[in-house]
Length: 124
Image (cartoon, rainbow, N blue to C red):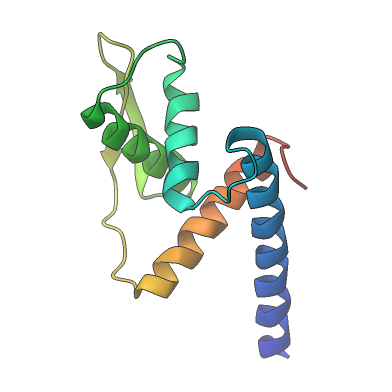
């Protein structure tokens, strides 16, 4: 019974992930499929809220980091700490991320990204 439940959960995650990719790719990349890093960048940009600002290369890395912290915050890994004088959000690491195999990392991030967009009602 447990195996069926996991398979059902995995299928649901896959379906939601595919739908999320479709929605975001259509909206932000002329239907070129986005990857996890692209979506984390978009979330970082959304959370920063400075859409008009021209970003430097270092800013792009920081935006991805903001995306990671934001989507993993509900899992207890990070907590929002403060906004700096330039309006950038900063997070505190509460718990080290678990040592996961690459495939497991991908599943965790996909699950966290799907949850982020479910809460914002972009997908169902």
